[in-house]
Image 1 (spheres, rainbow, N blue to C red):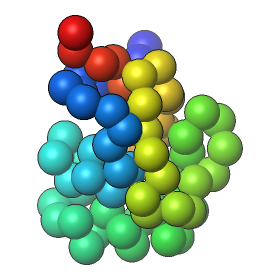
Image 2: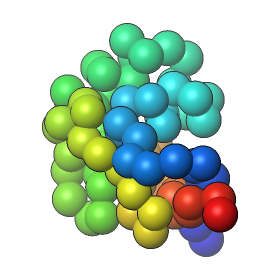
Image 3: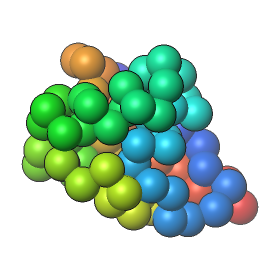
Length: 72
């Protein structure tokens, strides 16, 4: 089951989503897990820290799946 991450603007950089959603402790930690290939976006390993995440994107991290939704 996918969890929902609500954003109020798009795009949002990948590392910021991990940080602000509390999936990692700090922005630095977010950058490390991305650099190490531990995050997938739309089914593919994503190593771009500043990848622009938009409505409908699916992020996989730490055994969990998150669907990004833009709040209207």
